[in-house]
Image 1: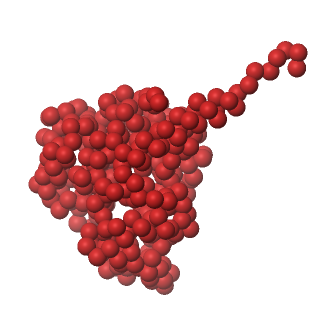
Image 2 (image 1 turned 60 degrees about the vertical axis):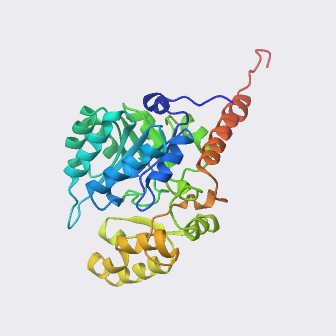
Image 3 (image 1 turned 135 degrees about the vertical axis):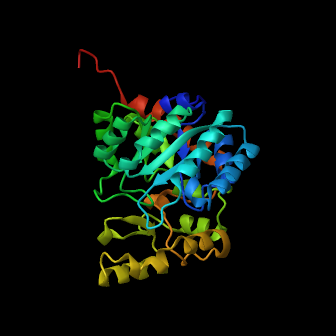
Length: 339
């Protein structure tokens, strides 16, 4: 077996071109460290932490569990009560001094992105920005990010309002972006990694698939729901508010859909169901899959077991290598002049 070397692996000093992206109430030190120890790179989710001090503690916990490179996700979104982004960013900068925290995954509105990109890059970070359209990717490119995570409509969480699938999104990114990109949204196996590389990507960014791992610090019932679910097990909420979110199709999500149909555009009618504490409680305490509204992707159709992060990463890369060296190589044949 040979490692798959890409601009992503070379830039970050990792073995496998795989990223565990930021996920609320999932992206904690135990998972991030396990992903790193498996040869990939994971992200601690900054805004899952209740304060900058708690984020610093989580980063240091990750350093205690692994010596491998890791990242932090910082999502910039308009909120009624926005967090102290500057304080969270300062913690990230301070903790980069050791060199182990190398990657910052940003997401959200690019208008507020540039000051943070300047700060993080000055501190030595490799900055990857998550985008759902080529237009937004080009805007992020202009403010100086190092790589784009192109996030197709298949993704969990916020797929945007353009509804562009990966098949077109990745091909167009390869044509139009000047900086490299990774594939994101609906990613789970080695065939997809091989296809992503063939389409010009430097690797894959996965979220939901990493939730169904032994080390993911969430209730086993949630993991089993991902195994039992399929590509039909999600739904889209908040479309009427132009803040679409792809979530697991449970009782809470169905209730939100009913209310939203009656009161389009009015978040106040659904806020009590959508609130993050319901999400956190289901993941960290009760394991009630019907409680709260929680992000999950159509990639459930490709999740058939809960495995360790090492098994997952090795299986993906091994399968990708077999496809690249076998199926793809054997598909190209020489035609003699006589024929």
